[in-house]
Length: 240
Ligand code: MN
Figure 1 (spheres, rainbow, N blue to C red):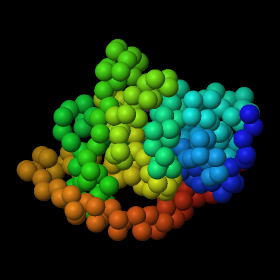
Figure 2: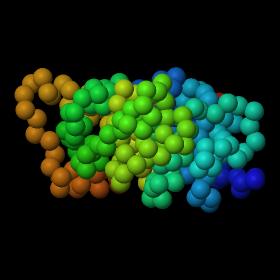
Figure 3: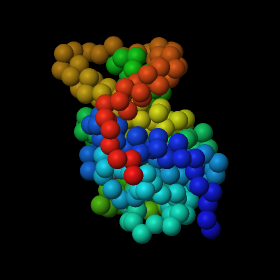
Figure 4: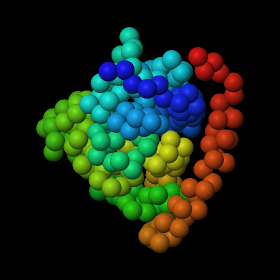
């Protein structure tokens, strides 16, 4: 069934999000960002199977919560679109999702060391990261969340948190706006890098729960400042 076209400014924002995530070193050829449709809540926008750093308006496809394209496209879809679909289904509060294999987060995904906020920029980690063990859901797999079934298992592991570490794979963060999800993906990676560095120096004093909460609330009001800088850094490129 054809779906109402999303607001064009939302499409543009998703193109920027894809390119920012590449520019900031969160995604490479793989990884993806999505945003919930502005007027149809059981539909989300996601690029077709293209490297995020090359994303253009014409690549943005609408999907339903079963991961089926609802806009006409001849392009292949991301194999892991079910990550997005099932999180949107399970979490009505979530407006945007970023999935990546950002390297510094991986050590936390493959050990029992928790990713915790080392500074105010990552206060959103104060509630702790969830963990996803794909083996529990699917036995031995290619590690990809490539079905609704595995997507549901991932969404269950995420629970009410904002970040889930995926063993042997990567991580997924969610937000109440596309800007916030991008911010969280960038600062999950930076926090991981800093936490790994600090670990070699001695015991770490993390933000406590209240500090993390206060810092997250304060930083959320500042996200537009960072977003504008990230967009500016991209320079001019062909949106189409
Ligand atoms: Mn992946």
